[in-house]
Length: 458
Image 1 (cartoon, rainbow, N blue to C red):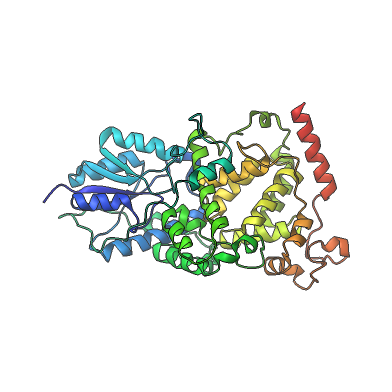
Image 2 (tube, helix red, strand yellow):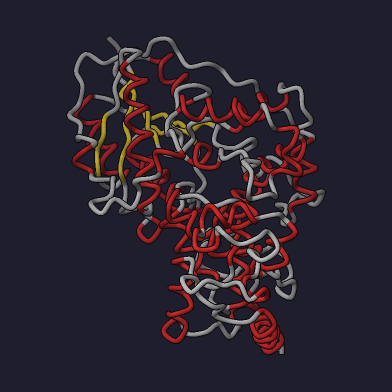
């Protein structure tokens, strides 16, 4: 029997359209390995909500592997050290894996390649970063021309199905127990409601794709309405690689609906990953240097406001509904994410990095590229960003996008208010005692933000 090869899983927890698996299986016995590595990412180790998802996704992956005569080996530690140890125990010398573009994974790949024959394959994005470039040969900085360039290369390669069987080694290395990793929260179980909204794993991901594509024709309008299920809700499945973006692209194109707007969201995901390749510190450093001089409030001074934002107690119903949805389900409607982020950055004048870190810990789809690029887009500090001076009015946004029923669901203190009053109870003298007053007025917050911005520019 030939020597086994290692299959290194990370954020690619699937068996279909998995180029690393297909190549490894053609070479000989395969030992699939997942390493819980909190040492390589350091400050970017997975947050609590992502760990909940990871537990269930790994369980689903192991079940799928066992159905094909294989199994998942679990180890904990620094990726390069763990893979070297498993290789030594099993007699393997080659590792197959998909490319990942977070700065810590790129560092881990370099470390693994020093001791093992690391073979990297594409498959986490529609196109690998650098596949499209400007006429001068540089990387795209602006999304719109990047999107047009990517479209010229679409569709992606047709995805291939999962193998029916996976060759196994004659002897399996030892594996940790998933339960011993304690990825699930202790009591009180803050993730108790997650399972009502989510089914992690490849099978759940494919079911979500099928359900969404029945409605993808309504996506251009429905995606902006928080009170209905108009978004794809595929972000955690894509983040953990339970489906490939190529699979989603081809299924969307075969849906019989015009899916162009949705497909551009998949391209935005590629764009975000391209930016973190060009700017690895995107999650912790302003992409525009002038924002280093922004007069953010000291978090010690602003702690009360920051806590009110996190708990959904700002007095702005649309913001509070979003923050409570986030805590309860590990996810927030995309339009509301923008409103809540803008409120923190501009109305409360709190550094975007504090908000991004809170999302990192509480989102099941906490993705370094998307989270960083989206927060900097709202803040105005990103490579391609909204102007800081464009300050969203939460009350107007709530009414414009018909968020009344969304607010009733997540802010039950206001459930009895009329559609007119629920967006701004104070304006209608309808605020119940159980609901807080606004922590800052819209005009006051706007003027303070603009003053800070103009001072930064001076």
